[in-house]
Amino acid sequence: MLGPALLLAVTALAAPAPSVILVTIDGVRPQEVFHGLDRALAGLAPGAAEVPLLPRLLARAAREGFLAGDAGRGAPFLVRDLEACSLPGYQAILAGQATGCRDNRCRRVPEETVLERARRELGLAAPDVAVFASWPRIARAAERTAGRLTVDVGLAPFRPAWAPPDAATEALLRAEVGDPAPWSYRRDRYTWALAMRYLARFRPRLLYVALGDADEWAHRGDYRAYAASVHDLDARLEELFGLLAEMGDYGARASVLVTTDHGRGLGADWTSHGNRYQGSRRAWLFASTPATRQAHGRSARGPHDQLAIRPTIEALLGLAPCPACQAPLTELLPGGALARARRRPA
Image (cartoon, rainbow, N blue to C red; front, side, top):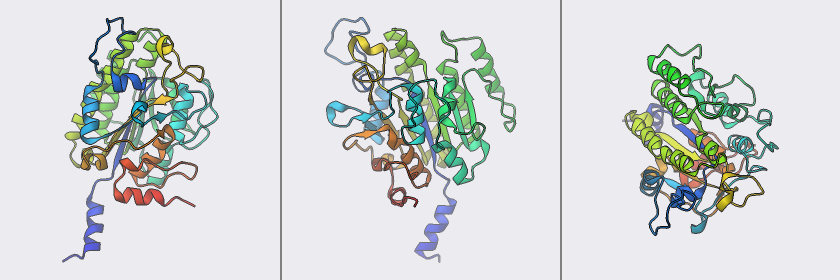
């Protein structure tokens, strides 16, 4: 008979490795997440009842997840990049610190990102860490050194040399070409579909999916299209959780984190963001991890910010937080991961 310590070690070896799926949606305010449609901006008559845009996400957060960012309930989730702008925000999220980037024209992130570190320290193969993004400049936030990761952004066709031909992926690429967006990169529907196909085929340890339609519609002043993009996220996340439910132990050990890079202005300033616009530093984070699912949902305690995302991902993957990073979000971690997270590298 195996002793308790040996039995625990054998069980750990037999268990599938944990994985993390990070999803960002550009420029979505906490107002739409927590309170739904802004009837005035949508051109509707005032009404007492809220019209939720993410009802299934809110229900899942209450049932088995975590949701921070509702400042009115004492749980703000703050933007910590220098400008409350897209590329600075993405670099801060993936580097775990403000990088000095001040606008969307920055060069590549100057620090090794959580994506690069995970591949290096965990000894992962090319398919194990992947990025799918609508906006091409996400590549400048994902990798300090180009070519370290599997990255598919903008309108670039997904055909890495190591990936076997796949009819479903090719069909998506053809549909994408025939359905151009009003802006210069692909629509989120294709970014998402390609990422989900990749998840089903390769079961990566770390997958990052970056969506951009909401911010584009907001800058164009089309509130209804912006709200529809937020509502689309609700169905997309349910698709993701449905896929994970079919993936056995891989799905059971997967953690899903969903956030935004920045907030937006208030009232008539909702189309813009940046330090000039009040509300731009208000963001939010949804998470579903094995720990939150076991605890049937965990409420946010006190203020958090976007710089906690990287160390949390590292802890969920079994890595200690990077030396320059702050502490991870303990609400999302099981006991073992929490103990490892407290043992910071020297």
